[in-house]
Every structure is written in C-alpha cells, then in structure tokens.
Amino acid sequence: MADFLGMMKQAAQLQSKMQEMQDQLANLEVEGISGGGLVAVRMTAKMDVKSIKIDPSLMKAEEREVLEDLLVTALADARRKAETAMQEKMQALTGGLGLPPGLFGQ
Image (cartoon, rainbow, N blue to C red; front, side, top):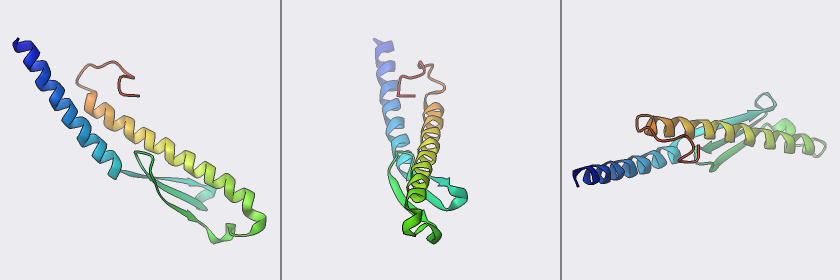
C-alpha cells in the first residue's frame, strides 16, 4: 500500500509540474525570421502567434507573392523554434523519471 501511495504522490507532483510547464510555455516567446529579417513572426511555445512584422519594402502589389512566401517561411521557422523549446522543457521535466520517449507527444 505504501508503494501505491508513493506512486500517487509522484503522479500529483508530475501533474503539478506539467501545469507549471504549460504556464511557462504560454509565456515563452520565440521569433521566426525570413527574407533576412524582412518578415518576423513572434509566437509562444504553445504556437499562439503574438505578432507579425513586415518590412515596408514588401508592401507593394507586385511583391505580394514574395510577401506571402516569406510569411509562410517565417511562421514555419517560429513553429520549429517553438517545438524545440517545448521539447526542451518537456525533457527537463521528464528527464529523471525514466518515462519512454513519445509519452507526452514528443
């Protein structure tokens, strides 16, 4: 019975740490850049886009397709950085628990 109570206590601690990590991910921001800085996208590690900055030189009708491509690239860059930040936080949380990889969506 003591083992079961110990496991329940560990599960409660893990749940608390998971909530704390989720809060940290919501506040951790990354920036994706494309076109050598012509387009920048800021998003949280939970994939919430916070802002997009576009260089004024791209605000021309004939540059529309270039701008669209740069937005897609900047969003993808920000997403990769956000996923990396999330994986690092998850690994820090679960590293000492001996849990199998992929258990929490890694």
